[in-house]
Length: 294
Image (tube, rainbow, N blue to C red):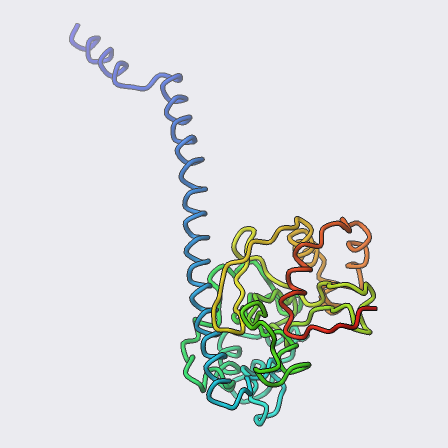
């Protein structure tokens, strides 16, 4: 009799199928709430860190021109020392330059850091390498060597090609300096380019993407401005995010630019021509403004 009671007590201590299903359902519900919240918290933390990075870079850029008779650091990594390039391209430990289109050996974070250390920005005091990397910049991988990228930011080519002194920049609080670039080759190569309406190479005769940007923070990006401030900018057009996704899902177009060429021409055909809020915004912020419209 005692043995039967023991067996019945064991049975009572176990879960029924319905109870197990209820527990699983509760766990699933909790996960569906917690996981997105954790992702959102990480995204906000990355955005805050990125904003701090861009703020520090922008303030250093602004301070430099103030101490150098209005001359600013060049956006071009290949500029001469006299032109004060803000960074240099990655170099290997033996001093050999890294190529942007080579599969081997891969470009490492240390290679990129050595290039950064050779630039005027590092020399000027921005010597924490983490300042040059956005924590949210993790999804990009090179078309060639398959590695992720370290340097997340670039200066627009207009700062040095079009204007060479600070006093030539009208409305500096609206003209951007640092952008989050989304290059698909081995590293962010050169200065960040944007098509202008008066650019003879521009097939669209309108403000238009040329080099890729990154959207590392949901639907927003971080921009620095010529007066020394930085801000979060929310992208308005779904076309902007779709173009980035298209770019990174088609590595064959990475050598042709972000705005034209290769398979990207197909995207130009399919895109909504009414979605110009983001390109117009970036156009208004371009450091060179011309009255010539073709």
